[in-house]
Image (cartoon, rainbow, N blue to C red; front, top):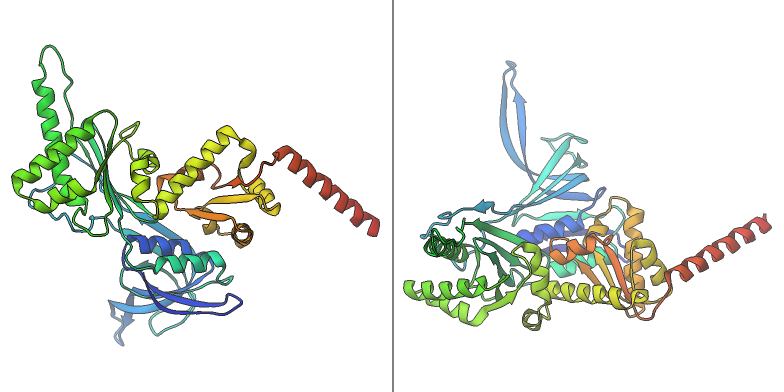
Length: 422
Protein backbone atom coordinates (compact mmCIF):
# COMPACT_ATOMS: atom_id res chain seq x y z
CA UNK A 1 0.00 0.00 0.00
CA UNK A 2 1.25 3.45 -0.90
CA UNK A 3 0.39 6.54 1.13
CA UNK A 4 -0.41 9.30 -1.36
CA UNK A 5 -1.69 11.98 1.00
CA UNK A 6 -2.66 12.35 4.64
CA UNK A 7 -4.11 15.16 6.69
CA UNK A 8 -5.45 14.37 10.18
CA UNK A 9 -5.74 17.12 12.78
CA UNK A 10 -5.36 16.70 16.54
CA UNK A 11 -9.10 16.03 16.91
CA UNK A 12 -9.02 13.13 14.43
CA UNK A 13 -10.75 14.94 11.57
CA UNK A 14 -9.22 14.74 8.13
CA UNK A 15 -8.62 12.42 5.21
CA UNK A 16 -6.14 9.81 3.95
CA UNK A 17 -5.46 8.88 0.32
CA UNK A 18 -4.09 5.37 -0.26
CA UNK A 19 -3.15 3.32 -3.33
CA UNK A 20 -3.77 -0.44 -2.88
CA UNK A 21 -1.39 -2.80 -4.67
CA UNK A 22 -2.40 -6.35 -3.71
CA UNK A 23 -5.00 -8.52 -1.97
CA UNK A 24 -3.74 -7.70 1.50
CA UNK A 25 -4.10 -3.98 0.78
CA UNK A 26 -7.74 -4.60 -0.14
CA UNK A 27 -8.17 -6.31 3.24
CA UNK A 28 -6.69 -3.26 4.98
CA UNK A 29 -9.12 -0.97 3.15
CA UNK A 30 -12.02 -3.25 4.12
CA UNK A 31 -11.03 -2.82 7.76
CA UNK A 32 -10.58 0.95 7.41
CA UNK A 33 -13.79 1.88 5.57
CA UNK A 34 -16.99 1.93 7.61
CA UNK A 35 -20.63 2.79 7.00
CA UNK A 36 -21.04 6.57 6.97
CA UNK A 37 -17.49 7.33 5.81
CA UNK A 38 -16.85 9.40 2.70
CA UNK A 39 -14.87 7.60 -0.02
CA UNK A 40 -13.61 8.99 -3.33
CA UNK A 41 -12.29 6.60 -5.98
CA UNK A 42 -12.28 6.04 -9.76
CA UNK A 43 -15.47 4.56 -11.21
CA UNK A 44 -16.96 3.59 -14.55
CA UNK A 45 -20.50 4.87 -15.10
CA UNK A 46 -22.84 4.18 -18.00
CA UNK A 47 -24.17 7.50 -19.27
CA UNK A 48 -27.16 7.97 -21.60
CA UNK A 49 -27.44 10.96 -23.90
CA UNK A 50 -30.70 11.97 -25.61
CA UNK A 51 -30.32 13.73 -28.95
CA UNK A 52 -32.63 16.46 -30.34
CA UNK A 53 -34.42 13.82 -32.42
CA UNK A 54 -35.23 11.75 -29.32
CA UNK A 55 -32.77 8.91 -29.94
CA UNK A 56 -30.68 7.71 -27.03
CA UNK A 57 -27.03 6.81 -27.00
CA UNK A 58 -25.23 5.18 -24.07
CA UNK A 59 -21.52 4.96 -23.39
CA UNK A 60 -19.21 4.29 -20.48
CA UNK A 61 -17.37 7.15 -18.78
CA UNK A 62 -14.46 6.84 -16.34
CA UNK A 63 -14.69 9.43 -13.59
CA UNK A 64 -13.94 10.01 -9.91
CA UNK A 65 -16.94 9.68 -7.58
CA UNK A 66 -17.36 10.56 -3.92
CA UNK A 67 -19.94 8.49 -2.05
CA UNK A 68 -21.18 8.18 1.51
CA UNK A 69 -20.66 4.52 2.37
CA UNK A 70 -23.77 2.45 2.93
CA UNK A 71 -22.29 -1.03 2.55
CA UNK A 72 -18.81 -2.56 2.21
CA UNK A 73 -18.26 -6.06 0.78
CA UNK A 74 -15.01 -7.99 0.64
CA UNK A 75 -14.53 -11.22 -1.27
CA UNK A 76 -11.41 -13.36 -1.30
CA UNK A 77 -11.51 -15.71 -4.27
CA UNK A 78 -9.89 -19.10 -3.88
CA UNK A 79 -9.22 -21.74 -6.48
CA UNK A 80 -11.78 -24.57 -6.40
CA UNK A 81 -10.92 -28.13 -5.65
CA UNK A 82 -9.03 -29.58 -8.56
CA UNK A 83 -8.49 -33.03 -9.94
CA UNK A 84 -5.60 -34.85 -11.48
CA UNK A 85 -4.04 -33.09 -14.42
CA UNK A 86 -5.51 -29.72 -13.47
CA UNK A 87 -2.22 -27.80 -13.55
CA UNK A 88 -0.49 -27.43 -16.88
CA UNK A 89 3.14 -28.54 -16.89
CA UNK A 90 4.02 -25.58 -19.09
CA UNK A 91 3.02 -23.10 -16.37
CA UNK A 92 6.07 -23.65 -14.21
CA UNK A 93 6.27 -20.13 -12.75
CA UNK A 94 7.51 -20.69 -9.23
CA UNK A 95 8.18 -17.03 -8.57
CA UNK A 96 4.85 -15.74 -9.86
CA UNK A 97 2.03 -14.54 -7.65
CA UNK A 98 -0.85 -16.92 -6.97
CA UNK A 99 -3.83 -16.58 -9.33
CA UNK A 100 -6.12 -15.23 -6.64
CA UNK A 101 -7.58 -11.76 -6.34
CA UNK A 102 -9.63 -10.08 -3.65
CA UNK A 103 -12.59 -7.87 -4.49
CA UNK A 104 -13.67 -4.79 -2.54
CA UNK A 105 -17.04 -3.21 -3.35
CA UNK A 106 -18.28 -0.03 -1.67
CA UNK A 107 -21.91 0.98 -2.19
CA UNK A 108 -23.53 4.28 -1.29
CA UNK A 109 -25.02 7.53 -2.51
CA UNK A 110 -23.05 10.14 -4.45
CA UNK A 111 -22.27 13.21 -2.32
CA UNK A 112 -20.32 15.26 -4.87
CA UNK A 113 -22.17 16.16 -8.06
CA UNK A 114 -20.53 16.11 -11.49
CA UNK A 115 -21.76 16.49 -15.08
CA UNK A 116 -22.48 12.77 -15.47
CA UNK A 117 -23.95 11.73 -12.08
CA UNK A 118 -26.63 13.48 -10.04
CA UNK A 119 -26.28 14.22 -6.35
CA UNK A 120 -27.81 11.39 -4.30
CA UNK A 121 -27.58 8.80 -7.08
CA UNK A 122 -26.71 5.29 -5.91
CA UNK A 123 -23.41 3.79 -7.06
CA UNK A 124 -21.11 0.88 -6.20
CA UNK A 125 -17.37 1.52 -6.36
CA UNK A 126 -15.30 -1.49 -7.42
CA UNK A 127 -11.91 -0.74 -5.90
CA UNK A 128 -9.04 -1.53 -8.27
CA UNK A 129 -5.35 -2.09 -7.60
CA UNK A 130 -3.05 0.87 -8.26
CA UNK A 131 -5.98 3.34 -8.17
CA UNK A 132 -6.08 6.02 -5.47
CA UNK A 133 -8.77 5.84 -2.76
CA UNK A 134 -9.49 8.86 -0.56
CA UNK A 135 -11.11 8.12 2.83
CA UNK A 136 -12.68 10.62 5.20
CA UNK A 137 -13.97 9.15 8.46
CA UNK A 138 -17.44 10.12 9.64
CA UNK A 139 -16.47 9.98 13.34
CA UNK A 140 -12.82 10.95 12.88
CA UNK A 141 -9.67 8.85 12.81
CA UNK A 142 -9.23 6.95 16.07
CA UNK A 143 -5.99 5.31 17.22
CA UNK A 144 -6.93 1.88 15.80
CA UNK A 145 -7.68 3.29 12.32
CA UNK A 146 -4.46 5.34 12.29
CA UNK A 147 -2.51 2.26 13.43
CA UNK A 148 -4.03 0.23 10.60
CA UNK A 149 -2.85 2.84 8.06
CA UNK A 150 0.66 2.87 9.54
CA UNK A 151 0.81 -0.92 9.37
CA UNK A 152 -0.55 -1.07 5.81
CA UNK A 153 2.07 1.26 4.32
CA UNK A 154 5.10 -0.66 5.62
CA UNK A 155 7.01 -1.70 2.47
CA UNK A 156 8.22 -5.20 1.64
CA UNK A 157 5.17 -7.15 2.75
CA UNK A 158 3.65 -10.13 0.94
CA UNK A 159 3.46 -13.86 1.46
CA UNK A 160 5.98 -14.95 4.09
CA UNK A 161 5.05 -18.62 4.37
CA UNK A 162 3.89 -21.11 1.76
CA UNK A 163 2.16 -24.17 3.16
CA UNK A 164 1.02 -27.47 1.72
CA UNK A 165 -1.40 -29.23 4.08
CA UNK A 166 -1.86 -32.72 2.73
CA UNK A 167 -3.20 -36.18 3.35
CA UNK A 168 -3.40 -39.27 1.16
CA UNK A 169 -4.85 -37.93 -2.09
CA UNK A 170 -5.68 -34.41 -0.86
CA UNK A 171 -3.68 -31.20 -0.58
CA UNK A 172 -4.37 -27.52 0.06
CA UNK A 173 -1.86 -24.89 -1.03
CA UNK A 174 -1.87 -21.85 1.25
CA UNK A 175 -0.05 -18.52 1.35
CA UNK A 176 0.27 -16.76 4.70
CA UNK A 177 0.96 -13.04 4.86
CA UNK A 178 0.73 -10.70 7.83
CA UNK A 179 -3.05 -10.39 7.73
CA UNK A 180 -4.36 -13.06 5.38
CA UNK A 181 -4.35 -16.78 4.77
CA UNK A 182 -5.15 -17.41 1.11
CA UNK A 183 -5.98 -20.90 -0.11
CA UNK A 184 -4.41 -20.69 -3.56
CA UNK A 185 -5.49 -24.16 -4.71
CA UNK A 186 -6.86 -27.52 -3.62
CA UNK A 187 -6.37 -30.91 -5.26
CA UNK A 188 -8.06 -34.24 -4.69
CA UNK A 189 -6.92 -37.49 -6.30
CA UNK A 190 -8.69 -40.80 -5.51
CA UNK A 191 -6.29 -43.33 -3.96
CA UNK A 192 -7.35 -47.02 -4.07
CA UNK A 193 -6.93 -48.85 -0.79
CA UNK A 194 -4.53 -51.71 -0.45
CA UNK A 195 -6.31 -55.04 -0.67
CA UNK A 196 -5.47 -58.70 -1.08
CA UNK A 197 -7.20 -58.79 -4.49
CA UNK A 198 -5.50 -55.82 -6.14
CA UNK A 199 -2.33 -55.84 -4.09
CA UNK A 200 -0.30 -52.74 -3.50
CA UNK A 201 0.14 -51.86 -7.18
CA UNK A 202 -3.13 -49.89 -7.57
CA UNK A 203 -2.44 -47.98 -4.36
CA UNK A 204 1.08 -47.11 -5.52
CA UNK A 205 -0.20 -45.96 -8.93
CA UNK A 206 -2.73 -43.70 -7.21
CA UNK A 207 -0.04 -42.20 -4.96
CA UNK A 208 2.26 -41.62 -7.94
CA UNK A 209 -0.54 -39.80 -9.75
CA UNK A 210 -1.23 -37.75 -6.58
CA UNK A 211 2.43 -36.77 -6.23
CA UNK A 212 2.63 -35.73 -9.89
CA UNK A 213 -0.50 -33.57 -9.56
CA UNK A 214 0.81 -32.06 -6.33
CA UNK A 215 4.14 -31.21 -7.99
CA UNK A 216 2.45 -29.31 -10.83
CA UNK A 217 0.24 -27.41 -8.38
CA UNK A 218 3.21 -26.65 -6.14
CA UNK A 219 5.31 -24.97 -8.83
CA UNK A 220 2.26 -23.05 -10.02
CA UNK A 221 0.91 -21.75 -6.71
CA UNK A 222 3.84 -21.56 -4.25
CA UNK A 223 6.23 -18.66 -5.04
CA UNK A 224 9.26 -20.67 -3.91
CA UNK A 225 11.77 -18.40 -5.66
CA UNK A 226 10.50 -15.27 -3.87
CA UNK A 227 13.08 -13.66 -1.58
CA UNK A 228 10.35 -12.65 0.90
CA UNK A 229 9.16 -16.25 1.38
CA UNK A 230 10.75 -17.31 4.69
CA UNK A 231 9.55 -20.91 4.87
CA UNK A 232 7.72 -23.61 2.96
CA UNK A 233 5.74 -25.87 5.27
CA UNK A 234 4.73 -29.39 4.28
CA UNK A 235 2.29 -30.62 6.92
CA UNK A 236 0.33 -33.84 7.19
CA UNK A 237 -0.81 -36.57 9.54
CA UNK A 238 1.24 -39.75 9.30
CA UNK A 239 4.17 -39.86 6.90
CA UNK A 240 2.64 -38.37 3.74
CA UNK A 241 4.82 -35.26 4.08
CA UNK A 242 8.00 -37.36 3.78
CA UNK A 243 6.81 -38.92 0.53
CA UNK A 244 5.77 -35.52 -0.81
CA UNK A 245 9.14 -33.90 -0.10
CA UNK A 246 11.06 -36.87 -1.53
CA UNK A 247 9.03 -36.73 -4.75
CA UNK A 248 9.43 -32.95 -5.08
CA UNK A 249 13.22 -33.21 -4.70
CA UNK A 250 13.53 -36.14 -7.12
CA UNK A 251 11.28 -34.53 -9.75
CA UNK A 252 13.06 -31.17 -9.46
CA UNK A 253 16.38 -32.98 -9.98
CA UNK A 254 15.01 -34.92 -12.96
CA UNK A 255 13.78 -31.69 -14.60
CA UNK A 256 16.92 -29.77 -13.73
CA UNK A 257 15.08 -27.09 -11.75
CA UNK A 258 17.94 -25.81 -9.58
CA UNK A 259 15.89 -22.93 -8.08
CA UNK A 260 13.29 -25.38 -6.78
CA UNK A 261 15.95 -27.76 -5.47
CA UNK A 262 17.62 -24.91 -3.57
CA UNK A 263 14.31 -23.68 -2.15
CA UNK A 264 13.29 -27.17 -1.01
CA UNK A 265 16.61 -27.71 0.77
CA UNK A 266 16.76 -24.26 2.40
CA UNK A 267 13.14 -23.39 3.18
CA UNK A 268 11.12 -26.58 3.68
CA UNK A 269 9.98 -27.52 7.18
CA UNK A 270 8.05 -30.76 7.74
CA UNK A 271 5.38 -30.56 10.45
CA UNK A 272 3.05 -33.19 11.89
CA UNK A 273 -0.60 -32.10 12.16
CA UNK A 274 -3.69 -33.93 13.39
CA UNK A 275 -5.78 -33.56 10.21
CA UNK A 276 -5.18 -32.78 6.51
CA UNK A 277 -7.32 -29.62 6.56
CA UNK A 278 -6.52 -25.90 6.39
CA UNK A 279 -7.50 -25.28 10.03
CA UNK A 280 -4.46 -27.36 11.00
CA UNK A 281 -2.35 -24.31 10.15
CA UNK A 282 -2.91 -23.23 13.76
CA UNK A 283 -0.93 -26.29 14.85
CA UNK A 284 1.75 -25.45 12.28
CA UNK A 285 2.27 -21.93 13.64
CA UNK A 286 2.53 -23.23 17.22
CA UNK A 287 5.27 -25.72 16.35
CA UNK A 288 8.75 -24.83 17.67
CA UNK A 289 10.33 -25.28 14.21
CA UNK A 290 8.13 -22.59 12.67
CA UNK A 291 7.79 -20.21 15.62
CA UNK A 292 11.60 -19.95 15.83
CA UNK A 293 11.81 -18.88 12.17
CA UNK A 294 8.79 -16.59 12.22
CA UNK A 295 8.91 -15.12 15.71
CA UNK A 296 8.92 -11.57 14.30
CA UNK A 297 5.83 -12.00 12.08
CA UNK A 298 2.37 -10.92 13.13
CA UNK A 299 0.50 -14.15 12.34
CA UNK A 300 3.00 -16.28 14.27
CA UNK A 301 2.58 -13.99 17.26
CA UNK A 302 -1.20 -14.42 17.02
CA UNK A 303 -0.87 -18.22 17.15
CA UNK A 304 1.52 -18.14 20.11
CA UNK A 305 -0.65 -15.72 22.13
CA UNK A 306 -3.85 -17.68 21.43
CA UNK A 307 -2.16 -20.91 22.49
CA UNK A 308 -0.99 -19.21 25.70
CA UNK A 309 -4.56 -18.05 26.40
CA UNK A 310 -6.02 -21.53 25.97
CA UNK A 311 -3.35 -23.03 28.23
CA UNK A 312 -4.09 -20.35 30.84
CA UNK A 313 -7.81 -21.09 30.53
CA UNK A 314 -7.09 -24.72 31.39
CA UNK A 315 -4.65 -24.16 34.25
CA UNK A 316 -5.60 -20.80 35.83
CA UNK A 317 -9.03 -19.71 34.60
CA UNK A 318 -9.09 -16.64 36.86
CA UNK A 319 -6.37 -15.15 34.66
CA UNK A 320 -8.05 -15.99 31.35
CA UNK A 321 -11.17 -13.94 30.64
CA UNK A 322 -13.19 -13.61 27.44
CA UNK A 323 -16.35 -11.87 26.32
CA UNK A 324 -16.86 -8.09 25.89
CA UNK A 325 -18.38 -7.38 29.30
CA UNK A 326 -15.87 -9.39 31.32
CA UNK A 327 -12.84 -8.07 29.39
CA UNK A 328 -14.04 -4.48 29.85
CA UNK A 329 -14.34 -5.09 33.60
CA UNK A 330 -10.77 -6.43 33.68
CA UNK A 331 -9.56 -3.39 31.69
CA UNK A 332 -11.24 -1.03 34.19
CA UNK A 333 -9.20 -2.66 36.97
CA UNK A 334 -5.93 -2.45 35.05
CA UNK A 335 -5.55 -6.22 35.19
CA UNK A 336 -4.93 -7.01 31.51
CA UNK A 337 -1.43 -8.08 30.56
CA UNK A 338 -2.30 -9.19 27.01
CA UNK A 339 -5.47 -8.25 25.12
CA UNK A 340 -6.57 -10.49 22.25
CA UNK A 341 -9.09 -8.77 19.98
CA UNK A 342 -10.41 -9.59 16.50
CA UNK A 343 -10.45 -7.00 13.72
CA UNK A 344 -14.07 -8.09 13.15
CA UNK A 345 -15.10 -6.03 16.19
CA UNK A 346 -13.72 -2.81 14.73
CA UNK A 347 -15.93 -3.24 11.65
CA UNK A 348 -19.07 -2.75 13.71
CA UNK A 349 -21.60 -0.49 11.98
CA UNK A 350 -22.49 0.94 15.40
CA UNK A 351 -20.06 3.80 16.21
CA UNK A 352 -20.68 3.38 19.95
CA UNK A 353 -19.66 -0.29 19.83
CA UNK A 354 -16.48 0.47 17.87
CA UNK A 355 -15.62 3.34 20.24
CA UNK A 356 -16.01 0.98 23.20
CA UNK A 357 -13.43 -1.44 21.80
CA UNK A 358 -11.05 1.38 20.82
CA UNK A 359 -11.21 2.69 24.41
CA UNK A 360 -10.38 -0.78 25.77
CA UNK A 361 -7.36 -1.03 23.43
CA UNK A 362 -6.11 2.43 24.43
CA UNK A 363 -6.65 1.71 28.16
CA UNK A 364 -4.59 -1.49 27.97
CA UNK A 365 -1.80 0.22 26.02
CA UNK A 366 -1.66 3.16 28.44
CA UNK A 367 -1.13 0.77 31.36
CA UNK A 368 1.71 -1.04 29.61
CA UNK A 369 -0.26 -4.07 28.42
CA UNK A 370 0.20 -5.79 25.05
CA UNK A 371 -2.56 -5.59 22.43
CA UNK A 372 -2.70 -8.24 19.69
CA UNK A 373 -5.27 -7.47 16.97
CA UNK A 374 -6.11 -10.77 15.26
CA UNK A 375 -6.92 -10.95 11.57
CA UNK A 376 -10.14 -12.87 10.92
CA UNK A 377 -8.54 -14.03 7.64
CA UNK A 378 -6.20 -16.26 9.66
CA UNK A 379 -7.23 -19.50 11.35
CA UNK A 380 -6.22 -18.11 14.76
CA UNK A 381 -8.52 -15.11 14.22
CA UNK A 382 -11.42 -17.39 13.34
CA UNK A 383 -10.84 -19.37 16.53
CA UNK A 384 -10.87 -16.14 18.55
CA UNK A 385 -14.13 -15.11 16.85
CA UNK A 386 -15.69 -18.28 18.24
CA UNK A 387 -14.80 -16.91 21.71
CA UNK A 388 -16.78 -13.68 21.06
CA UNK A 389 -13.77 -12.05 19.34
CA UNK A 390 -12.19 -10.64 22.50
CA UNK A 391 -10.20 -12.23 25.33
CA UNK A 392 -7.54 -11.27 27.84
CA UNK A 393 -4.67 -12.79 29.78
CA UNK A 394 -4.58 -11.07 33.17
CA UNK A 395 -1.49 -10.09 35.11
CA UNK A 396 -3.12 -11.25 38.36
CA UNK A 397 -6.09 -13.53 39.07
CA UNK A 398 -9.58 -12.07 39.40
CA UNK A 399 -12.76 -13.95 40.32
CA UNK A 400 -15.47 -13.03 37.81
CA UNK A 401 -18.28 -13.59 40.32
CA UNK A 402 -16.62 -11.33 42.91
CA UNK A 403 -16.00 -8.58 40.34
CA UNK A 404 -19.60 -8.73 39.08
CA UNK A 405 -20.88 -8.56 42.68
CA UNK A 406 -18.74 -5.47 43.27
CA UNK A 407 -20.11 -3.89 40.11
CA UNK A 408 -23.71 -4.57 41.17
CA UNK A 409 -23.08 -3.12 44.61
CA UNK A 410 -21.46 0.02 43.16
CA UNK A 411 -24.40 0.45 40.78
CA UNK A 412 -26.94 0.10 43.58
CA UNK A 413 -25.07 2.64 45.72
CA UNK A 414 -24.96 5.10 42.80
CA UNK A 415 -28.69 4.71 42.19
CA UNK A 416 -29.42 5.16 45.90
CA UNK A 417 -27.28 8.32 46.02
CA UNK A 418 -29.10 9.71 42.96
CA UNK A 419 -32.49 9.07 44.58
CA UNK A 420 -31.40 10.85 47.81
CA UNK A 421 -30.25 13.90 45.81
CA UNK A 422 -33.67 14.10 44.16
